Image (cartoon, rainbow, N blue to C red; front, side, top):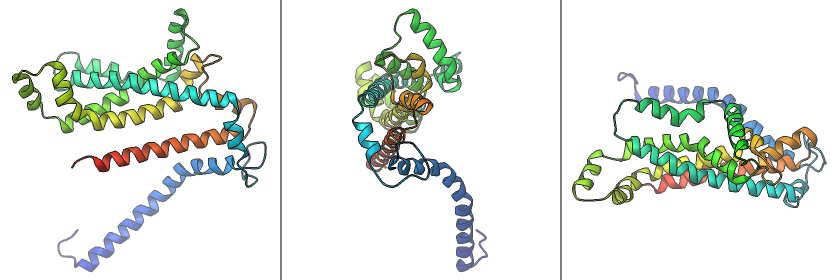
Length: 273
């Protein structure tokens, strides 16, 4: 703001700038949000096929979804897979971030690149490699296998989040002080590292759950008769039967996304300044 401007002039210019910003952002936000907003009305159709605009209004798609054993089994499998992935990714990503925090050595960048590789490597390449390896070990077709592979996939998200928390929250002097006072590795981990990594671990856990629950390529390669995740069920149903149950299950994804955002918002509000 120009110091020579009077307050009313500066206020009007600020309001014009805000209006231009909103006008520029509104189409982008609408483009991003509109596909999601269409899903719920399509799930409330009275028809037996997905169509837009829907034939209002009925909840039969949700009741059909809740009473279909195959869809319920796939939903349960997705929650099991995502929970295991969050646990595996949380442990591996956090320990990797702690191990590399504040350390400088030759090859550190290469090691960090290997940890972050699942974000960069195309999913179909990871899926094919995992399939060829796990098929030789006769581990294809179980939900735990998919969960472990998803754990590798989500590790970079936890690693980045925890690394950011450590850089922002942890003073390296605290670690040296704790060790000089005789604290062992477990005590240092619990009393020094744990308070610093909690915000990043929560954020990484939410991202990990979302990525795992939504992932379809790896789950499609590694699925079995009793280990078909909800995204894979939706993908195959889109190919063969366009029933409103697909939209009803997609509404579950929206509900989970909103719940994750609420959890993050509540955690941010309770975090001390």
